[in-house]
Image 1 (cartoon, rainbow, N blue to C red):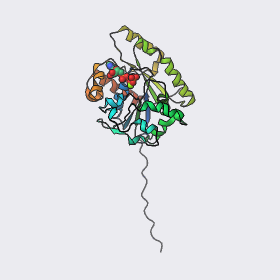
Image 2: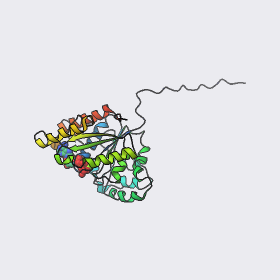
Image 3: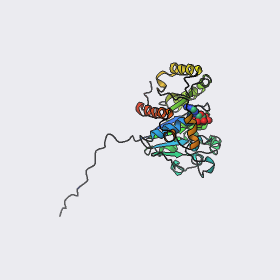
Image 4: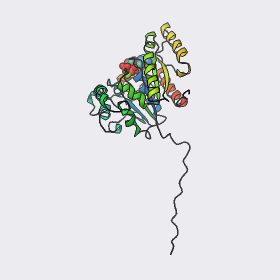
Length: 278
Ligand SMILES: Nc1ncnc2c1ncn2[C@@H]1O[C@H](COP(=O)(O)OP(=O)(O)OP(=O)(O)O)[C@@H](O)[C@H]1O
Ligand SMILES: [Mg+2]
């Protein structure tokens, strides 16, 4: 006797508003020190987390982004270093933060050894990219806080990222040295990632000083639509918030700095990855 065919459950058609299958990976980089990279990475990541699951990777041996969440790098058992130099996965060192939807890969001083240890590894510039590959369906955004150098960690970040945000302090001398960064970005674009999107962010804008205004005008002329509309002004709350182990969204959510970083996150979300001119 032939039995009745079993009912096969109907497959649901995919919905259009599903979150993207791959993360937007955003490196915050500039080889110049103290221009607002960590401040930008931490605060933008905190606001992006409201939009979708976000991972912040501290790639700086100084561990400033780690500290910014009240985690002492000296007390970590394992950090990004242990992952980069082994076959372990990033999720093994992932920490929760107090911000809903935001996870952190912490870093400590050991990471400075990775620059040397990775030198002899084949595919040394793509170690981070390979580690991130397993997480691309978990996070909507992955933000990389890059150290102030043009070494192997920076190269790994630029190779892994689809987008780079370059904070530039609006001081005359901060514009010097940008050429070096542009050269390495060009190199990465030609050799490794043709579609790398680069945008610039004016930081520590101070309308009271002429020099800051001159530098801002210069950036506007130099980068035109590659410069974010959002300006980050000098704000004492921004320098206080790391001491309290909190992003500005928690420490002082109504301050000008908080509104500016929220606006920047919105700009990043709304712009999406930029079209690369062919
Ligand atoms: N808009 C701002 N107004 C006032 N202080 C700021 C602002 N942005 C950053 N700072 C402070 O300036 C210092 C340097 O900022 P930050 O650590 O973000 O720079 P960085 O580029 O990551 O530095 P490094 O190159 O050492 O990693 C910090 O003490 C930070 O709190
Ligand atoms: Mg930093």
